[in-house]
Length: 143
Image (cartoon, rainbow, N blue to C red; front, top):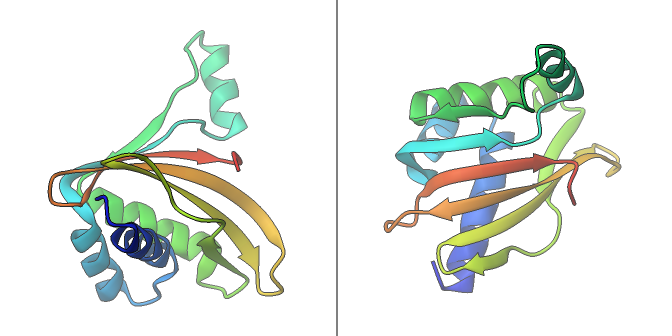
């Protein structure tokens, strides 16, 4: 994905999936964006999960979803939790970074209706030969 316009459009569509109110449109967007076996990995889970793992002498766990159905459930749940009530929305936070020919960085923010940033992160997206997301490593709070 070397064309900057294509990368920018991909990033815009990636952000849009998290804000899409229509379930059918959201599902279609996920199928267009993601490889069939695409995976999202939350690399730094919430503190309570890290604490629970540490109490069992496990290293910090990562959380992952794989495939269209699991990704659809993940995005839908995030939409229900953060966007559906109209208090928050996700938006791009800066330009897309081309890290390698098939790897981009998408910075994002969760903002209130008034524009106040209440969360932020970075998703590092690896794209397959068809330009679909094969791996998404999500870092929350790392802008």
